Structure formats: C-alpha cells, structure tokens
Length: 149
View (cartoon, rainbow, N blue to C red):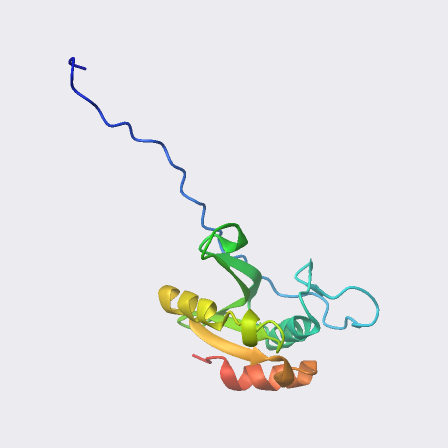
C-alpha cells in the first residue's frame, strides 16, 4: 500500500443459515390429551389448539413442519416462527393457529405473519381457537380451507 492511500477493510460476515423444512407424519393418532404433555412431532405443543390442529393434519396425512422459523425466527428482529408450514400442491401453506389472547388487542401480531406470507409467496390460513375446540372441528375447518391442488 502506498503512503497516504487508504484501503477499505471488508469485515467478514456470516449469512444466517436458512433451515430446511423437515416434514413429518405422526405415528400415533390416539394420544389422550389428559394422559400427559401434548406433543407435536416430538415437541411440546404451544397450546391445545395447536395439538388439535396437528392431529387433524395427521389424519389428513399432510406433511408439515411445526414451529418453523423464518427470517431468523425468534433470534432476529423481524423474524417469525410459523405454527405449521404445510406442503400443499403448488406451494407452501402457513396454518396460523390464533387464540384470542395473543392475537387480539395489544398482543396482535397478525400483520407480521401476513408479511411473511406475502414475502415468501405462501398461502395463509388462519385458524382461530373457536374453530378448533376439538380435533373433529379442526379437521372440518382444514378440509374446507387447505388447497387441494
């Protein structure tokens, strides 16, 4: 480097690894919710509604990922964790299970999930807690709202 000249230093940066979607099918559809912890693909379910939704997806034999991080998940500002990412014909579908506490009023994060769906060009299906008071209700709702291809 010549005297008096400056050279810009480029810091090395790591790109955040994008997780690959791992789709599973459940093995046991006869789990009694009163018998112990509710599990979805081996993970504790975030709510009874999420567990019911998972059971409905299993009955329908859809492949899906549970608690799928996008844009850095919870570790990055602007990141999100999707309840269910379902592989539907043609493109992915987000199934966002919403309860009245976390998804209304001051806790409302609806715009964040809608932004993810728009940016990724994924379909968004919103399943409210009052639409999945049982596995059969969740099943009926998902059969009528998931794309069939």
